[in-house]
Image (cartoon, rainbow, N blue to C red):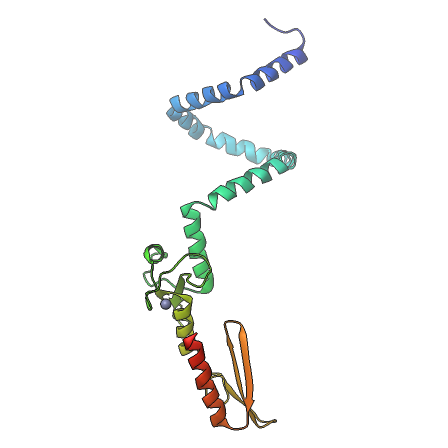
Length: 227
Ligand SMILES: [Zn+2]
């Protein structure tokens, strides 16, 4: 039955659509699936026309999108927040994040296959390559570390933090002016200074004689190794 009043007709259709939202959605989906090829063909056919229309109405469309975005800002923010939350939990995202981190640290993949094999090795590794202690994910004291050559960036081993530190100490060139690790000579005070930070704890001591500072240094290293 046709409506005399256009507004009433509009309202009726609106209510109908709201009431049958799911059913209509399902119908559209079904139609799209059934006519997949035909729709694709049509899209291809109208590609140029659409491009032409978009070019002609560039400003109008820009304004429309702007208004739409403003109107649905909160909805979109909420949607993307939820979407990202779920996406960040996926294996794909975890992998991408990990590889991205490695790249930031300057880790270079020796296989040149965009870190595929290295990532698989990272996943499969359960124990430190050097001391065999059981490793875990995360940032605790048994976390996996990607040990690499700091000069070339080339990846070498997956190790525990303790082994990683040991290698770092061996490879870091001695900056001390005495040529002895952790021992510095102060020309003004004419004193030898022992200076070392282990696990955030600073040890600082001065000596008149070089050999006293060396003895102290050896004892300190022994204590660190035992703890
Ligand atoms: Zn280790």
